[in-house]
Image (tube, rainbow, N blue to C red; front, side):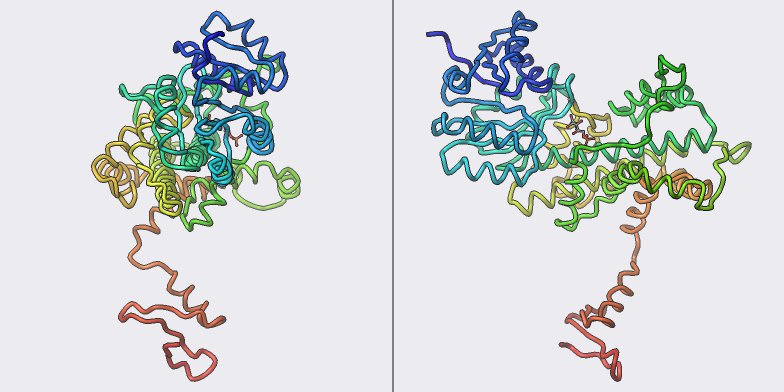
Length: 479
Ligand code: 6PG
């Protein structure tokens, strides 16, 4: 009988196909399977020479092709299709076998599936995989959850195909059940925020300084040589420099200005609300996409709502404004990451995952969409103090925020004055100032809640719970 495969991939759309090729290119014997046979055949026909593929044309054949304990990677669309694949394969598996879900699943679905399969003796390993098509083929960032036992069997294979940053593989076990998919969800939330901030910087350079897309591409190219060095800034230069072949116009001018989403940013915000963690950068980015997509609302208001005419700054007013935008971008990005890491900390505490934030920073340094030079700084910050309450107070970031502050405030004020929406920059600054404030107006909110609903309050000068008899003689009682 033919030698069995070390691992199998089912679901051979572009991500699954590229992941299978990546495994094969690293010398692993890979069983490949797809619901429709044609994809399996074409993978083997086109790329069979890259490594050792074992095509399977039925679920049973696929399962039989795998050595035990079986390692079966599912690369199908998150949601119903994942459940359907599990239902198809689970009855064919034996205790100790592993199903790896490499899609963008909701971590609560992953927890549910992990529990149900655990009862059948099967390991379900929710695994975040980032890096798009190219990453899947040449080295993604991999965020596995699931049992420690499954990590022992899967770790060497996943680590082998992951991206490498600073000599270290961008893959480590993040914690049990949904930990991996939770971290991937927050990764995507940060991705939303990063892109929104880049878009605001572009808008300010364009409307606020009157620069053309090709010039702005150059500005980003220059920024990418400094502390903002990242994959998203790099591809921003490509997209902005691109000309539409049909019209000869800048590509960015012929694309409909309505951002879409598959939903991971929305899940991040929904989850953050439940956890009580202010991820304002991600929330603003997600809502900015919703606003852009509210075509009817925008049509009904454009030209109706009064405000400043879009007019570029000139002369002394324009001096140093581009540098200030770079500062606003960097500072707001720091805030967004700080919020995202706090959310992972809160999720980890809520579900007892024991996630190592330093490990998260390390595996985001390469392969993933938000890979960036400054993740080295985050790695260092958590290496120095794993219990850091917020990244903002780590030396490097505190100093960077101090240095960027004047420019950041200038940009937020100027955006408001010019009527250029900058929800990412301004909400990041409001968060920063909120944390800095010795007193917040929340005291007044507590007073109002006590007034209309007897919701009680705490005092600054002594412990206890208090209520003022607002409708009576206004004496204070301890209910
Ligand atoms: C990645 C990406 C990937 C995908 C996002 C896009 O890490 O490789 O995040 O998962 O591009 O899901 O999400 P939206 O369609 O919601 O923008």
